[in-house]
Image (cartoon, rainbow, N blue to C red; front, top):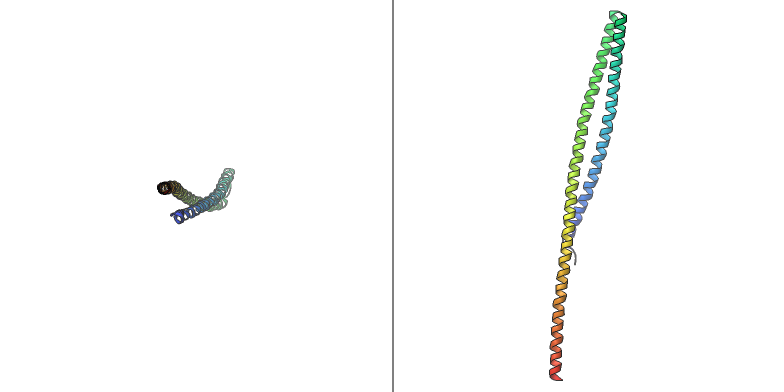
Length: 164
């Protein structure tokens, strides 16, 4: 006997496979975004280091005594470097948001996968119960057939006994 919910069972298994692929894709995206974040953090750290070095260099020149033109140029340059650091810092913050969104997408995909796994497991248990019930019904029908066969044999023997 064919399981009546076989098509539904197949659909649920396909959905589980899709959920597995979606989770794998979400994890891959997260890994890429984390790598991008690390790269942007390195760039920011280099910019901060450059700013710190230039600031120290200007302090040294001022303490040794320098012209106001050079101080003005150095301050302008520091302003440009500080602006660059702020831009890079903003990019890092934006990338952190992207990473958070990617983490959330992984979590959503993980929950979806779990639900799909539960659906497939429910179908498996239902099928097992159905098969068990069908086996019991089959045994019951065999028993009825055997009873009928036994009754027919008994009647036949009885008739032979009366005739013979």
